[in-house]
Length: 116
Image (cartoon, rainbow, N blue to C red; front, side, top):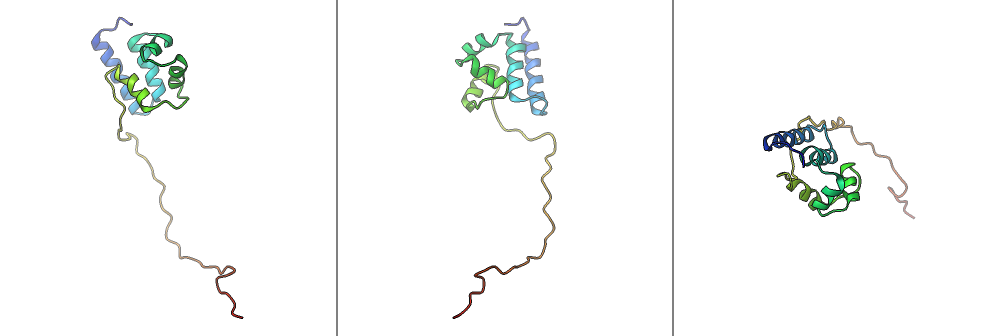
C-alpha cells in the first residue's frame, strides 16, 4: 500500500476518471494507474486481491483479452467506482447522407419474360 492520504487517493482517482472520460486513457491504463498510484501493489498481489490470475490482470492492463463486465466491475468496486455510460466529451461526427439521386433502372434477365 502506498502512504497516500485519503484526500490524495481521492484526487488520484478523480484524475484517472477524468483522463479516461476525456479519452486520454484506455480502461486498461486506468486500471493500471489505480493499481500502482492508489494501492502501490504489484500485479501478483493485486490479482490475488481481485481473485483473478496475474495473466488476466496483465491482459486487462494492456487492453488485451476479453474480460467480462463483472471482472471489470469487481476491480473498479475496490476503488469506489462503477462501470457505466457517459456522453462523449468530444463531438462525434456522423457521416453526412448523400444527396438524393434519382433511381436508375436497368433491366436484367427475367425482368420482362418472353411469351411463347
